[in-house]
Length: 382
Image 1 (cartoon, one colour):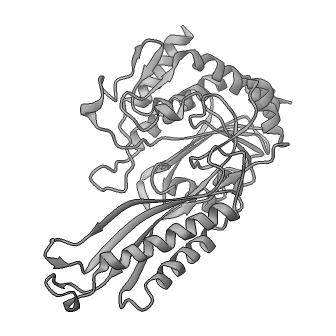
Image 2 (cartoon, rainbow, N blue to C red; image 1 turned 120 degrees about the horizontal axis):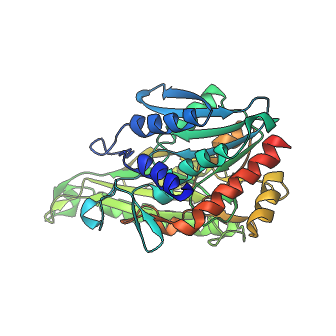
């Protein structure tokens, strides 16, 4: 019976499309899935609050509280998914399908299944036994702007002592992850007839100088910063997209480059951005080209929780896995800013996220519920 109810809960969350995207044609409200989750939590005895985003009231966060007191434990996840290519799926992305020991559907691994499991875990607890509250937090726009998490920090809620974010980690505790920022650099030259280079100022050639300078900057960053706990132990700088020119017989007047930087814990985003832009400007000195810069994603900070933190020690004991570091970013820095010792731990696998036929393994669901219940007992009841 528990397996049937578990399937039904996950299916109810998966059926609601809640894509968030920087592309307006893809971006959607998360209201339907959040209200579905609110109904589940209300039925489980939680006090439920829907918190519209100040700048986007058609989207909202959810904060549900079970028990009373101060401190406690937050079980957190995001309600949005990335866009999808329906033609690449072998099943309906919004129809939860079980096959070969997997639950297939958009958002199963990343990370609607975790939210359904958090509800189930709470139903196995007696609120009268809790000395501190158990909270379920569901956010908007994690996959794009982190605006849901930013709104929580602005509101200074929730205030808890510990937090688990159920991002896909294959049930291995993750106590640290890299930060990310995305930048656009545009070189502006002067177009002209390609028969005579003196008639213009080629922005592509200017961009080549910028890229060469940034390659040197990337190498220096890797020498300056090193953390062996990460599989890629240094910061990275990736040239992701370049656009320039419109015809082979015209001197290119404008060329734009989009890049991302993945930062280690302890690196300052603003200082890194300033140095990156300064190096790009210096590379163009004397060329007559102009540099324009904008941040396409202001950035998500890196996160690092002490290996000695109580939530880390408890998760290591219960999973039998040592805490690790991850290259992907999460909302952990925002919950940490609210005072919570924040660990990332979920049943999905990052290898299944953001891809067609996304799935979570059935064999991990019951152990994840048991794990969440024991963490709740330790940090809310004892």
